[in-house]
Length: 296
Image 1 (cartoon, one colour):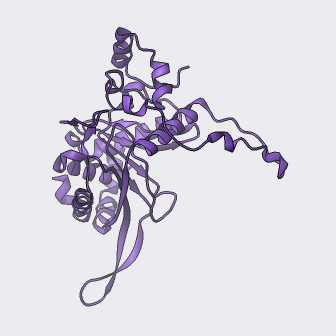
Image 2 (tube, one colour):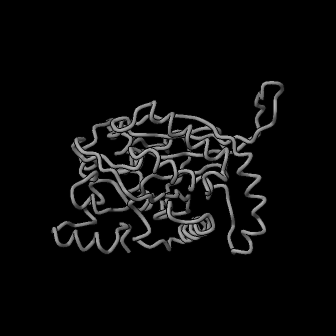
Image 3 (cartoon, helix red, strand yellow):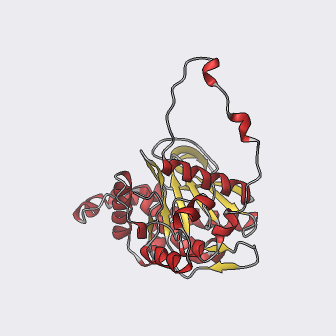
């Protein structure tokens, strides 16, 4: 079974152009191939040789220093690793850190628990993050874009598809919730749960991968206070989330306990500058602080 994920239309285009899609995936270090890769978009940039360390120096006989065991990397993991290495080398990425008050989100989510159950939906905080991201991408079009391989053209997208990074036993997978800005909270929550569940079983269909406007990678269920996620080309930004915690916040007269979630926005500095990133996360945090406003 092929490890390369590509929609049937993209495979058909590759055949028309005489492109070996398996070789293309190896060349650009990607597990998923989108139309722009076949047409010579961002994929071409990733295909350029990566100049790095002399990796032959890593070929050490570790058994000289103590007992070791060997575990082969899966084909899926190898391609994903190549993609991340290429992205890290070719994109001048910066990470902007902020935090958002999610007291209201948590209260609303608990208040909707019975209604969510009646819809057969498990309503998680991630669904609210996805809604907020969709609104922010519409408000800040440069974040919903891709840069051409020569760096001369910015492709602004008139759709909002959000990738959801899922940690699985066979590696990281990023299924995509499409047209998320046109969907209600219940549908978004249901689709996230469905895609994440099927990703664990490797049952996500090729057409459900690739083409995201931006990706959310959520480590909140595990822990951490901050991290620097790697931008996933041809996207120009990625949003990281870590564990929500209660912190003291000064209200002008006293310290109040407030539920805050750390946010980590990595972005391609060729497209987005620091002020853009700060405004984007500030707007995003404002939506989470007042979730009823973003759900209208």
